[in-house]
Image 1: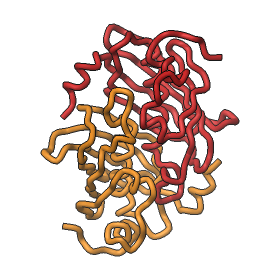
Image 2: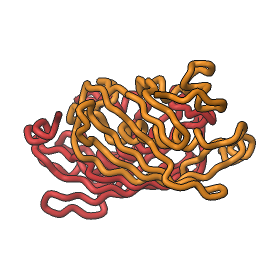
Image 3: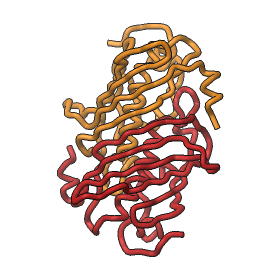
Length: 148
Length: 148
């Protein structure tokens, strides 16, 4: 299902470039990638559990952030990246020890602003969480300048 | 600075109960805990990095979720927990390989709904991210019923 294309995202999808560390941590496997839309599977590992014994909401946010960020990166030029400015999340159900499907989509891209949304579901399609996010397109060199 | 009190949160704070796995993952150390307000330090580890080489936004969300959740839990009865319903985040700066201070606060608690906010800062106080969240108070047994 994945289109063969040039660009950073497809370097990750095809394994020409090693996955970013945070995606490895989440048990990330690309399922589909096309310009502006990416899906992947993640794992609700025990190391992500909150006191109630479920995958913590922030970790579900990390899965959604990964999918929305990848969708944004699929539209970028070499040397550009996206910094998330805000992210809004709704959590529909608690999960543990299960495979999750994260899908991210670019709703609109302006000059330097990208609007994204995402869904996190079980393999049967039931909703676990949804998100929207706003990102800013920056040159990789400028991103470093935002650092502490 | 931490008040000695009975309850689940103080079992974690004092080490009478092992930290939840997700807090261990985040390098969590309690700094202060009082009813309705909790702060802790976390670590921006390399395993949390996004493709740009910074701590991913979702992981910053996990730190804020941990602090806000702990603030909520500080007000609960034994056998109750809080499920996060929604969380809204703003990201002010990119960070890597640094200690972060997460502070969570209960803004208001109704019967079964808790409104929270939180800040994530560097040790010098500069803002990294802010969040608000809404939680639902549930009995631990009912939380299990929400699971897939």
